[in-house]
Length: 164
Image (cartoon, rainbow, N blue to C red; front, side, top):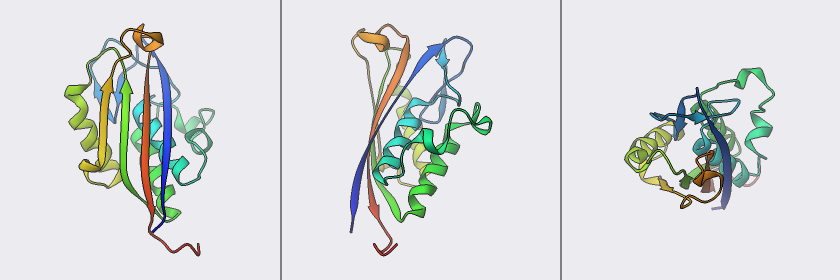
């Protein structure tokens, strides 16, 4: 069996007048993330990690922020399509390990819902989706509450013969 790992990172600025979407769920907060899509940094980091593991470039290549069809798109759609891309190449997801960096809002109460949502979209067991939340101890752009970032690592395994 051939296994591969991938790493993803994303960051978006916080701004007034936008909803906050993280891990595929809406979280009540005074600000949301600025972006072409719904700016879900956690999903974007996971997509980049999956695409990288399968050597399929990055999220911007497949879903460019210059394309009108992705304006304000629900990032769960991007994740679903990303999973299909890696499956088309013969890979299945082993597990996801992700960290979201945000001073506010407190994310720990939302992690089980995020895990369930992401697992459902990807068609995997929620136990294979690890999500952690941390702050930056008030340091940097995150600490100043100017933005939120996310990191993700993934393990994928080839399910089709290497003759493809």
